[in-house]
Length: 164
Length: 298
Image (cartoon, rainbow over all chains, first blue to last red):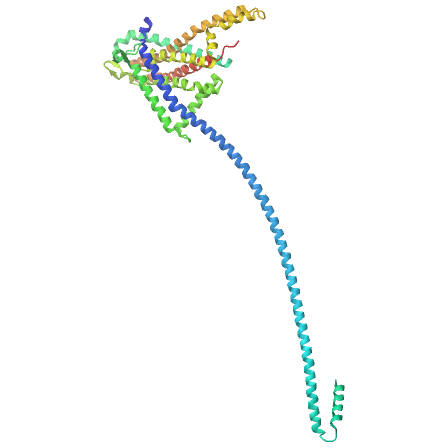
């Protein structure tokens, strides 16, 4: 074949070039294309996952926010109820304390009054007795003679009764 | 499917133009060589790659050495890509990812199927890179003037028909293997030797009498397909070889005429031709793969 000679065709050279090309395919595929496409695909997946997660997180955040709001509202209401209750109770307490104190004070006053009365009575009686005695002795001294003891006594008693 | 055919015919037009361009340049070169070839001595361009030295029976040609350099560069590139491969891409990695994504998108235009694109991507992309680096290595200024024993050590790897023929053969054979894998052995066999259509004739002749005319034609079309497979190899390898070799000769000739500034636009032209030829080879390979993978439907 003249044409093959003209172009210097040599099956050994062709084989060598084929091996060269095979090496290129192998190396490019194994060390460049495969890892690179794998990285790209992985990244694409990650981005997809990330977007999905972000969406989910946003939803969750909203949900949590609503929950917090609801809880806050609830708490506020509860606090108001508790406050109202406390106020009522304290008022009640105050009232009852005041009442009790009043009663006690009244009781004390009453007791004191009674005591004062009884003391006054006894004092009066004592004073009466003593005065009578003094009057008797004084009268006895003044009227040592003349009047009998019994008459004197009767007279004085009567006079004292009238005095009352 | 119609889009594919359109793409295909577009590419074919482009290719025809390129081939004509290449032939013109080859012609000029032949004249040049006649007139001035002798005057430039060692820079004379031969159609074949010259052996630099030999190991036993095996001639190590300058094109083979350049191909080894190309392989070496690609291996380094691959290892750099692997070493820099990270979840958060560097600028370099971003660029590489851009290239890969762009290539895949472009392949989708031909295959219309991302999964299939991904399947054939390593082969097609390797063809592109290997041819591109080989094309460009031959263009490096002054690379032809590094000589050993009177012969240049470096010559573009694709400026040797051995390289392009090997690649063309690989491309067509791999496409056929891929076709068998996707379509199945029997179906694929019937693309070329269409026994199915012959068997169909007695079955369907009652319904459609025209089948007695149509199916034998289909059978012969199948036979022609065998020729077209051989033609694919020839067209792929000669186109690439012709363009790259012509480019190198063109630049050498221009440089011999005017050494300064004038070769510059031609240099740019050849850089672009280097990309375009690598792209054409890769895209055609992809087209062959895709055609082989589509089952023959009526």
